[in-house]
Structure formats: structure tokens, C-alpha cells
Image 1 (cartoon, rainbow, N blue to C red):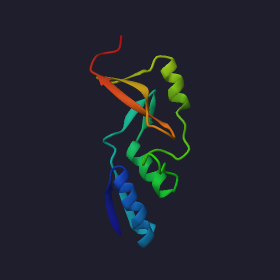
Image 2: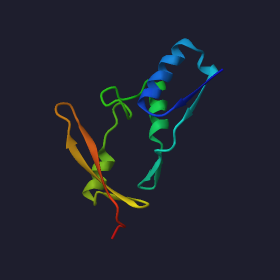
Image 3: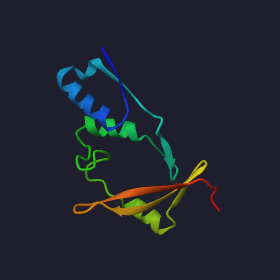
Image 4: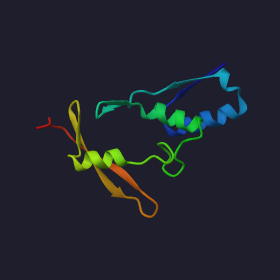
Length: 116
């Protein structure tokens, strides 16, 4: 039995390699939840997502994170409707940024003030 502490892309890749040489039933992953957040009323666990997508072979190889083939359609719609989300003491504004040929990514800007 092996236990691995995991958090993020590097740990997901380590676990993906580990299950190639050790029976997956003999591996327990303890995955970071310190970066979890509630966004638009949805609980998001980015490290759990990354580990799950990677082990399932569904991770986005281009970005190194996220689900292969996912779109930002909902985020684009929310941006058109206002673009800000309140997280306790931090307001985050999402805006598109250029990544060059082949796609776009999101940039997060934060400021410490309550929503109006």
C-alpha cells in the first residue's frame, strides 16, 4: 500500500506514472483542497479535478490543467453579465487574455473590497 500527498499538475503526473508500475488498488492519494473555492455558487476543487482528469486520461495537455475539450462558454456569458464574483473578502474579475495561436485563457484580477 502506497499513500501519496498530491496537489496540482505535478502530483497528477506523478500519480499517472505511479499507476503504470503499481496496482492502482494499492495507491491512496490524499489531494490538496486548500485551493478550493465557491464560484457562482458551485464548489470547485481544482487539484482534485486535475488529479481526476489526469488519471482518467481526460486532462488538457495543451494547458496542463483543466478538462480536454472544455469551453469557456458559461464564463463568457457571465462576463457579459457583469464579470465579477465575490469570494469572501476578495472580488475577482475574469477577463480574456491572449495566448497566441490556438486558444485563449482567463486572467484573474483581484481587489480587496466588498461588492457594491
